Image (tube, rainbow, N blue to C red):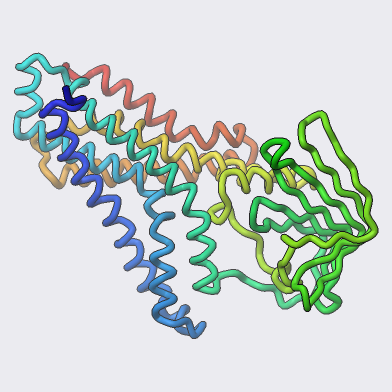
Length: 361
């Protein structure tokens, strides 16, 4: 016996068609608008057309991640609106199928969208970093020195540096941190008084320091050294003058390690904590937004397509405004940052439950 009955397959197929078109159409629209606005700037950098095209291709996952809830909303509003106008929901109710049971395939689709969003969110930091590289967006300072900064490196490594000198290819008061998982891949901290870049080997050698290896929370293995060559620390001195990575270029785990390093240095990390939690909250909102859109769409029976577009666009704008608002209040500490990331979902979830309770089943 098949899990999905014919009616379920029909409802899901109609929902998926609209969802797919929206999820792919929005990124294409964003590319056209953004390219029109920034093409002159890219040409001034002497970028090759193929690099610009490839950069925008790498930018698609990040855009899809952000528009996933909107795609779910459009699919839900338009499919339910169509079923309502053609009396298909009424016929289902007459056959003993409640409204809740009728929209169950859409809930399944929203769950799949959540899973896809989490997957895209795990990949997009790497594609975003590649996009920045192709478009030469990373800003380098003309200064030859920099003091008291934190640098997010690849592989979840974080450097906290007291001072950097490009001309001397030297660092002072260096701390290298890597968050581990278990005894086989332990957390470690390397603190050194100074560091020197080897041009021939293209890596840094740290001097006069201590390496702390933490296989477990209760175990700390300390090793003092006169010099230590870090084969993973290969950033050129000039690269350390670049602006730091943004949350969009870091995975959930990497961003967590970066936040911990900044907290130890006394920096304000509220905005980063909100951004980190949004990597989970935005995909999960797909299910919430579906529960909100389904009962709302039953009122589009006489409104037609234009009314459906208005509801979808209006709700999307409100949702994005709430995300921006909660980022602001979370970064300012008015509410806990992790809670701030979930506030838009909580608002829409509460309204959605109220609307579902009023639907005639």
